[in-house]
Image (cartoon, rainbow, N blue to C red; front, side, top):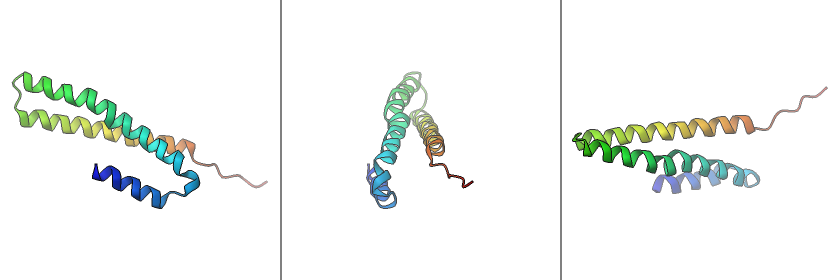
Length: 94
């Protein structure tokens, strides 16, 4: 939670107030999709299944960490693509 609070504080310093709501919306959507829902629905059951099948707990939690990392990376990629496609276009002068 400290990382989330620090990222909000840093973003509020770096993003101009006129664009802040848009970028915070993208940030929240990316965080929610990559870790909030997907992490809870995938990583928790994955860990439970691995432990119930007599996999070592250390390995089960390592797999949970790897899958959470992959989900977070996918969220960052989605955010990057969204920011790239939504960036303001430079107007060409005739």
